[in-house]
Each structure stands twice: as structure tokens, then as C-alpha cells.
Image 1 (cartoon, helix red, strand yellow):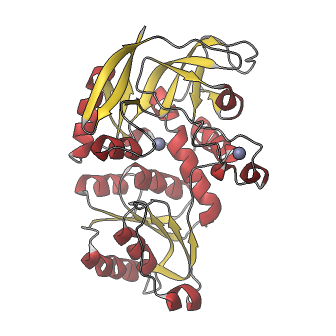
Image 2 (spheres, protein in one colour; image 1 turned 180 degrees about the vertical axis):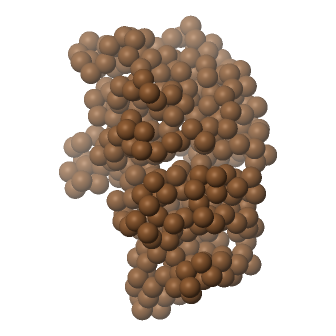
Image 3 (tube, rainbow, N blue to C red; image 1 turned 135 degrees about the horizontal axis):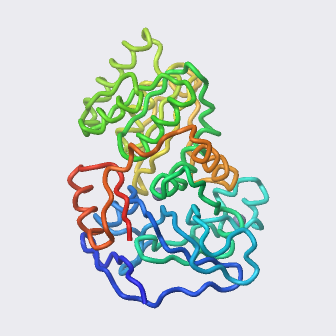
Length: 346
Ligand SMILES: [Zn+2]
Ligand SMILES: [Zn+2]
């Protein structure tokens, strides 16, 4: 038997004793060493999630040690430290063959949840394509950042950032701050706006030249425009990256990008939301809108390289380490605006 964290109702987490998993052919059982909290999990904790009917195991950013490798697994053996993401595309559907594996029609239904637990069964399709041996130089907590970093790397392929560009990041959650780390490493000048003063300060500590606390309500769109105008000599941001998933964030991104710039709509607003757009701004100012979703295996490999080479340091995003028994408390703390990511150490 083993302990696993369940989300049983909005705001309620329980630890349950469940049978320990067994590795079938091609599969691997990990003893989880670190599982990170993430915005999707927090959203589910607050109000439930359509793809996570409760009670549900949850947690999808993880690293661990191989307890057992099933028949036919050649890439890993018992004792190996492993980092992986929680999904892999099927490789066969229309989207996979069109090189849009992030949109694979099976990638969401075959993903795994349940990293907030002592053990996790990693299925064969993930073992084959989206799992790696963790280098000893990398902590288990940093290694568990592979999944969010893969999302950011996928964004880069659409955002096409250039060294020296001015990037505005809207939102200071884990993804906004991770973008700040990556874009700084690529040589961009970074401005960050967000609602949380501590996290805008953290963005500056991570290398953002400008970090400003803003309500991100309709009034702050003008405030954001004034800030970027001042920084850029009236031109606007070369790249605007929206990481709040709120309509006001989308509007702020559209209002601050320069002529010929690129807006990346990284955060997803609730289904049914609509955004009023000035068509002349899109057409005559030739603003390119990109909307990255999820990631492809090549993004996961690149994210792995960035972490393994030590090109970026994600440790500052880990606010605290907590035992599995404090999983519920960690989400309550996040709900109150405390911390960025908590590492759950079973
Ligand atoms: Zn597919
Ligand atoms: Zn995540």
C-alpha cells in the first residue's frame, strides 16, 4: 500500500491508502521525490476542473527514482533518477502526423495525474518519448519543472524572441516568472506586471528590468500602456506574453505590443470568454497573435537540455518544501497569494 493525495471536493484534500502500482510491460513505477504545485491544480482546488472529476488523484509535475521497470523497458532501470512530463502524443493521429503533436487527439485522455503520492505509474507511451534520466547536478525539485518549462519552450517556437527585444510579461504566477527566467537567459529585456507585489519583486530578482504591481483591471490597461511607452520610447513592446488567462490580460497585451510585434496568448481564459479587438490594430499594425497550447516531444527534449546544461536556474520558483501530509495546506497558502510553487516531498 502507499499514500496518495486526493482532491475530494473544492478546497478539500485527503490522503488515502491505496494499493502500490505494479509496472506492466513498458511501464515504470517511480518513487516520487518531488511533485510541484501548479496553477491548474490550484484552479481545480478552488472550484474543480472539468477534466478532473472528483474524487481524483492529482499532481502532474514530478521527478523520482525508478522502483520497478516493466518488461521491455530498456531506457531505465531500478534506482535511476528520472524526470518526465505527464503526457505523450500517440504519434499516429492526424495532428501527430501534421507535426502538431501538442494537439494530438489522444494526448489529454492518456495523460497521467497523481504525482502527489509516494509512487506513480508512468505508462509506456510516456516512458518511451517523454522521460529522461535526471543528471545528478539537478535537484529533484528543479527536475520536476520539466513540464511547465516544456510549455514555455513550445511558446518560444511561436514567439520567436530575439536577443535585445523588449518583452512584456503579464502575470506573475509560475508561468509568468518562468518566462522571465527563460527570456532573460535568451538576452531579452524583460518587464513584468502583475497583481502580487512580492512576486513582481521576485521577477526583478530574477532579472526583469521592470516589475510593476498592477490590479490588471480595465483601468490598468492604460497604466500598462504608459509604462511600456515610457520604456520603449513610445514604440511598444516587441513581444507581449499574456500569462493570466484573463480577458483584461489579453487586452493589456494587445494594447502594449508595438507595430509588427507578436502577442503570445499563453494563458487560457474560461470557455465562452470573448475579447473585443480593434481590427485596425491587428491589420494595419500587423500584430501577430499566437496561442501556444501544451507541448511537443521536441519541446520536452529542449526543456530537458536547458535544465540539464544548467542554462537556466528554476530553483527560485520553489517557495518551500512540504511533506505530503501538508498538501492541502500548501494549496490554502497558494490561495492566499503565498509562494509561487511548493515542492511536495512524499
Ligand atoms: Zn496523436
Ligand atoms: Zn503544470
